[in-house]
Image (tube, rainbow, N blue to C red; front, side):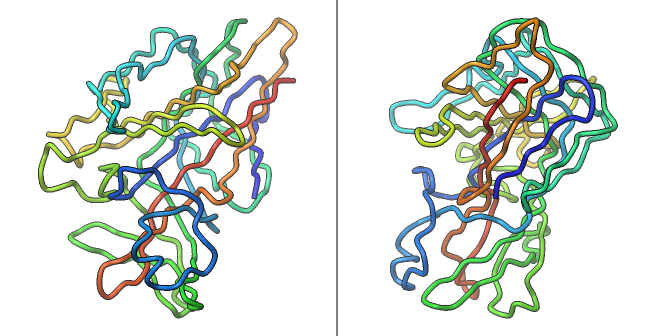
Length: 291
């Protein structure tokens, strides 16, 4: 389930953000195949490959310094942030103020169109950023104790959440509006528990560190959403710092980015009665190739 996305003309860049909507501090791993009910309920969250993973992209680019440098992870694994976004060393490579909708599932090549493609200056870039809408179109299924559970959306407390149904006829895409990295589409009742930022390091496959900060647009620029303003987010600002920097030389004609959502795109976790399984957004990761 690898998807290659490239711009139709000039040099354009497509990057990623990685989301984890689970109450567990420890990041989720690949879901076990057909676990028994007790094992699933005691195992916390995990990742599966989705059938639908839609995002809306507004802007992408490269940076020589981390624009989320003040979003850090402490020794306990907790993410701390001062909500700052510093784009002073960043060069935008694709901009579409209206947003371009793409589906990372299905394995088909797609083009980012309708925006401006800009060639970045020659140099070494240790960070790639993306600005996307904080609403995701998702669809996935998971089998527990021999029973397949299919995702569907339900309105709970005024927001749509991904729950499950054993009837495949009810298998459908749902939209998750991410406003809290812990609770997903709803704000944690206690302000101090709200998570406006996330971070994850990948040590296998394409290696590097992801950071993401919920944000909103003000005066044409993005600003991080504070705990007190949970629920006001309209954007997600993501940064991926690959182990190997992206090198743009005078001879570089373009940059192709491959994304994978295999065993990562949707998170699965034990549900609340009457739902055995519930679903949320999960990460996708990039691989860069210049040409």
